Image (cartoon, rainbow, N blue to C red; front, side, top):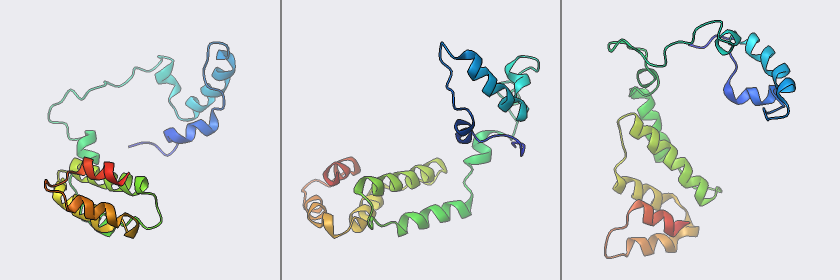
Length: 156
């Protein structure tokens, strides 16, 4: 677990205004060293402290990323399914709507509870709103059932 003094990766860009290039090493170094020092990371970068092993050598080790972050927590699965069922396009663009759906379905799949394509198709078609009614009717009227990639192409 990260210490309370560790920086989040996205926040470091607010602290380091100079990006390393061929002609600005001294300026960049003057900014990065205090940041790494304050996070107790400088000793890993300058080699004075050995870096931890990039892999876990004990096959019985429980502290892996998958165990910590992708384990199928029942409450988390219920929340994701609930979010998916309540998802509507509303005022958002069709691209944003589909991106939000993909984010949720990707998380469900990673947690071992993938959403069947027919359920996803029904959910999308029922929630895109009246602006896409003709597109949905055309997709449903096809002789061959439509797949999710084809439906997305029609909606976009």
